[in-house]
Amino acid sequence: MAIVGKKFPNLEVDAMNDMGDTFRVNVLDEAVKNKKKVVLFWYPKDFTFVCPTELHAFQAAIGEFEKRNTLVIGASCDTPEVHFAWLSTAKDNGGIEGVTYPILADSNRNLSSILGILDITNEVYDENTGTVQVEGDNVTYRATYLIDEDGLVFHEGINHMPLGRNVNEYLRLIDAYTHVQEKGEVCPANWEEGKDAMNATLKGTADYLASH
Image 1 (cartoon, rainbow, N blue to C red):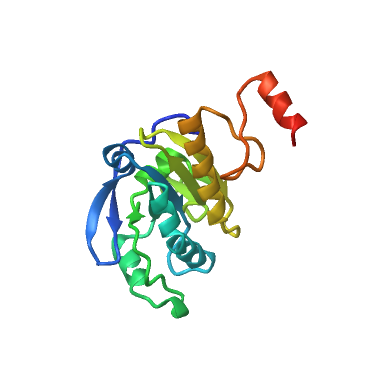
Image 2: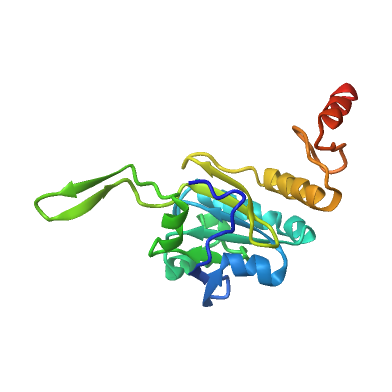
């Protein structure tokens, strides 16, 4: 169920950082209390293949997000201990050493279940055991949420497991949303910082199209 235009769920989740500290993070509070935007990106599993490339890509862009008053938070269903083991593993050995932003450890899957981003292809009732059996890995897809200073989700996207994200696109979306916030204009297709935006009227659209 899409949550664009709605408040992000108000829920605390365990998290880990590069110092080995386990703490609790409420993403909604991080946005509202700090008056910052948040990019929250979920990945399937620690110690895999595409995932470390994404975490390093977000880390490489951390300065650009900070310039935009935006916090970066990673997330998966691994435990804090597994996160720390990965954070302590060198980059050339498949690790994410050098990543400094917090990583949520949604090992009870409370938040990812609310968001509906778990890879559960089917749930089957087993008459022999009287239990529901899950088909699928029960880990998250590559879901991404952009959240504003009031806790409102202004972008969400979900990639299948093999498809890594383009970090620059999230910077572009943050720039566009900030332009809307500050200027009251809307951003047309392929808009980037420094390009013309337009008024949200038929005349505004006609004028824009006529000049481009």
